[in-house]
Image 1 (cartoon, rainbow, N blue to C red):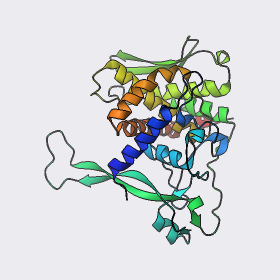
Image 2 (image 1 turned 30 degrees about the vertical axis):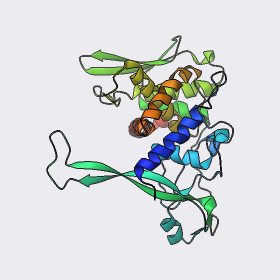
Image 3 (image 1 turned 180 degrees about the horizontal axis):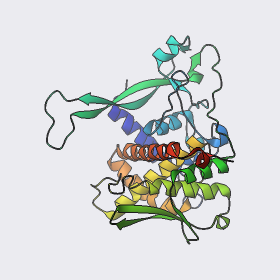
Image 4 (image 1 turned 135 degrees about the horizontal axis):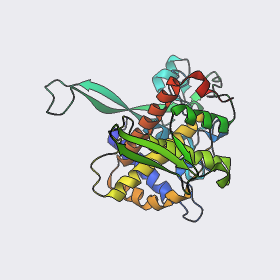
Length: 315
């Protein structure tokens, strides 16, 4: 079984290879799932059909690479079901992984209690990165699995709009460019999304992709004070590039959650070189961004779940 570092290095190498293929004149990033997409409305939502668990964060990226959800960028076999489980889980459920099949290592964090007193400033419980191997349904023999697509009522645009409004995020309309502004006040930091009018967008898909992207930016200060951005970036442009990567991944994952097609934002082409530089230097970079993107999505989902039912309606 591959160790965590090997998984990070392999995944990072694949992402670097994909980013190096980006056409600056007609570009889209791998996670926009061009061409060969799976699931309803092109949404890739990998899941464990036996436990009901949905793979998220960095595992969403790892399994998208394996499944072929990154379309023409991906090489090798593709597994359009997006359904994965461990060898033991498949066997216990009465299925058999075919001889000679290679699994995909994914990661998880296990909380471990320290055996010795924690150093100053450290918690008594820390997170340990572990790996385990999963196999796609296409690699398994046995009774055909039932189709359990993650279907939400309403059209893609209705779902996206209902979700965004239910978060309570303030959106100001009429700006020249989409952005999220953070203001410091006596009560802490307040955030508001600024969006051009929807008729200024060429397609509804581009409009909602942009709005979801800015929604991830809106979560930057979830408590009104602390930020999910790392404090150890020496240069401001590095911080901007990381934040854009978090928003890019977050919007892609959120689009998959809502079953909404995710459109590339051409203005983010300027960050590709910065991402490549950091990815080449740090194999954990994409994993850090994916973790923060997933944290942003989890925060947004909690806000929506807490909203009154009428605000969550797509009618």
